[in-house]
Amino acid sequence: MQQPWLSISQNSDFSIHNLPFGIFQKDNRPPAACVAIGDYVIDLAAAFDFGLFSKYVLAENLFRKPVLNDFISQGREFSGYVRSVLQESLLDPHSLLKKHAETLLIKQSNVQMLMPIKVGNYTDFYSSEEHATTVGKLFRPDNPLFPNWKHLPVAYHGRASSIVISGTSIHRPMGQINRDATANPIFAPTNALDYELELAFVIGKDSDMGKPIPVEQAEDYVFGVLLFNDWSARDIQRWEYQPLGPFTSKNFASGISPWIVTMEALALLRSAPQIQNPEPLPYLNHPERKGFDIDLTIAIKPENDDEYVVSQTNAKHLYWNISQQVAHHTVTGCNLNVGDLLATGTISGNGAKSAGCLLEATAGGKQPIQLSDSKSRRFLEDGDEVIMRGFGEKNGIRIGFGELRGKVLPAIG
Ligand code: MN
Picture 1 (cartoon, rainbow, N blue to C red):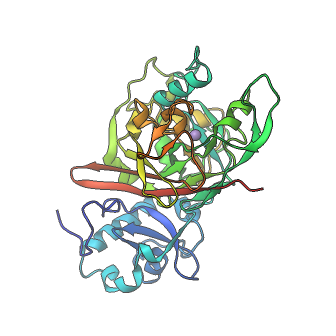
Picture 2: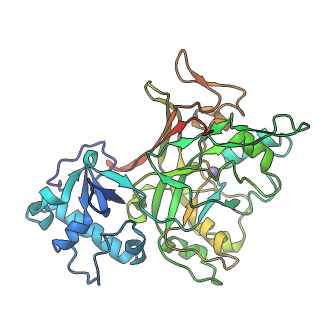
């Protein structure tokens, strides 16, 4: 294989095959679009000005914007073209990219990553059978999986305004808690703060209201994927969730990783077809039913301590895939817009060591997990930082997501 002129470490998430898109800021300059490569970002706004993408005629520089929505709206043909120009340029020692490398390549450690998209709507699914069964048992021991679960991808409409970029700390939320369902609730800081490890798919094309997206065409409407942390307050959730689902237990914050890994890059990581029994109804029955083989880890880093890996799981365990989720979401005629997020729901494997949240790993807080000899956790404590990572590898090619970090601060007030 031809090697790029830029040195990229073998275990970098950002190989020449990945090239995920993000928004960066350096010093006080305006934010701009970029791509990750090795330890660097490529400044796409400046690359556009140097004429790197001149074969594609655009009315304006779509990279000099505070979010990627307009760039994504241009379509997969354009983003695919940008990717191929960058791949060729990284292999060609006489390219414009190499010539202007001092301006165009900036160390990731010298930039700040910002929210890559303006999220209009966010929907959270519940697509891991392991997660739905284990959590269902905690809330309803006799009836863990509702009868609808294997017939449709269950979801709720989440809150978009409080989605924040990796590195954003969150305050422990306050809310109504009723520890003993027969008493009156109290108002207090949550005593059961949790994370949920998920992937979020970024919608890349508007659909028309009144026109369902057929399951076979669903991926044409997806631009790429991020890591997603659906922060959750379990004691608040337990009291409020019936009958309409979670509300304030989840609306205070959700975190996303800064890099959108494109569907083109993820094509390398397709998993074996999912076995679904019973057969889904025809509108959900994708002929291939393929997910993604992405290794995912969660670490907790207590204040002034090292980080401890508490879970290792994989996205291939998911029962419902993105095509089925898009088809179901739009089957009523509901439209999707560029920048909408469709999150998978907590991704868990079998057993506590592959649980995507603490609720599962600790059996509802009853069996603490050990971080070290002296530290254990039922749920998150103030000062804890949660770190999520994901990558896939095939034929020696690595496609990674980087990190999603978020720290817990004490409750306000
Ligand atoms: Mn969730």
